Image (cartoon, rainbow, N blue to C red; front, top):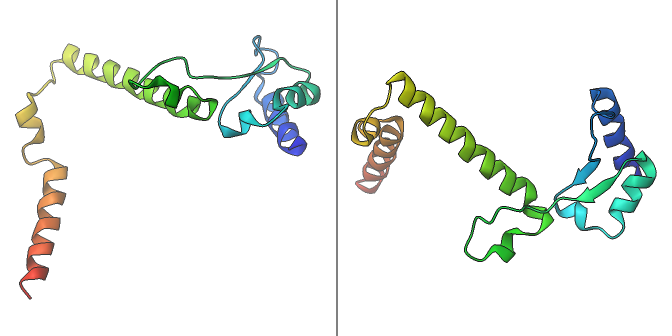
Length: 126
């Protein structure tokens, strides 16, 4: 485990962010639940370290997604939602908004679906 931490620290130094990480290193994912992982990272890097927990609740039973192993996934979902909102706002601003029925009619998904359906129908007639 120490070799992995050393390699990560090497990459942090090479990226030029070593002095810019004021809050230190945030460890997420299933590996962040290893016993004494924060102490090991602090020992190897000399930087403050903490475990990152997702603080946004995306489901009704939030206990399922508050584990550190879901932090990256929750972050990616939030980032995707943010990007989607920005893209929609940009489309509305540029006047390129189509109504929903125009968007889906004859789209690539419909074409793929109809090809698959046709393939299964052709296969079942033989």
